[in-house]
Image 1 (tube, rainbow, N blue to C red):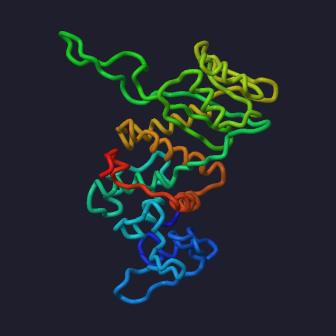
Image 2 (image 1 turned 180 degrees about the vertical axis):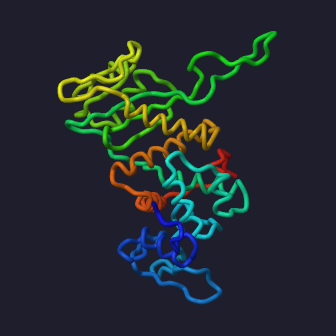
Image 3 (image 1 turned 90 degrees about the horizontal axis):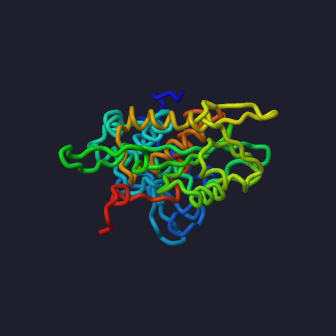
Amino acid sequence: MTDLTNAIFHDEEAARAHFEAIRWPDGVPVCPHCGVMGENFVIQGKAHRAGLRKCNACNGHFTVTVGTVMESSHIPLHKWALGFHLMAASKKGVSAHQLMRTLGLGSYRTAWFMAHRIREAMFDNDPEPLGGKDKTVEVDETYIGKPDQVFVNGKGWVGKRGTATKRKVLTMVERGGRAISIKVDDLTIPTIKRLLGANIVLDSTLNTDEAQFYKQPGKAFADHKAVNHGNQEYARRDGDKKTTTNTVEGFFGIFKRGMRGVYHHCGEKHLQAYLNEFDFRYSNRSGLGVDDTERARRAIKGAGGKRLYYRQAAGKAAA
């Protein structure tokens, strides 16, 4: 557990040095405008904000936050450092209200936007495929939210039964490795086939439940084994391997406890962002040798080369 008395959470200069060391680990700042390395210097003087640099190659100005999800933010860097740490270290997430109180932010909107920027930093937009030879990938689907309501004469608005109108999530977990979760519009064979093919190495062994839409896509892999939950089967031994979906179901357990107990509600347009957050923490968990400090460092490193505007996070049209 990280010592929360660490200077990076309280001192702005220490926090700036921390962010610079992560973004430029070789100690050579790179201009985000032209990409030239080392040809820049810190502008001194009280008239300029701390950490401001000027590039000799393009005459552009930048700080460590330019070209990251933190660009144009007025939140001090030591609060960003603590925000990254809290979201990286909290297994089931941190609500925007909690961030607002803990960091002393001025409004819920500021905290909410900060949390979404950190989720953007956690998102791996080009992940390595899961699995490989002699590796097992568990795949399962889950449903989020309540069914849509319909109007019935004499009864008013009542909820539909079943899962047809719930939001659908497909998660793939490499046993002993990473997780990739994707919000999907449907759970049809073409959709399943496309997502499994794009995210799992074909040499892998696939473990699923008995759902029919896994059978045809599963034929493309080295092996496909299923447990029959309908017959109360949850795990079995197949030679020297275990067939089960308990690992991916454990991931869903963490995700759903976080969504119900911490976040309470998630609009459909934000569901993928929350899935990215839980994927990141799971894929960088202590069981893989990653502690809270390293997990936060990886999240900060992922902030580079990304930008999230408030209108994007809020789902508003561009001005």
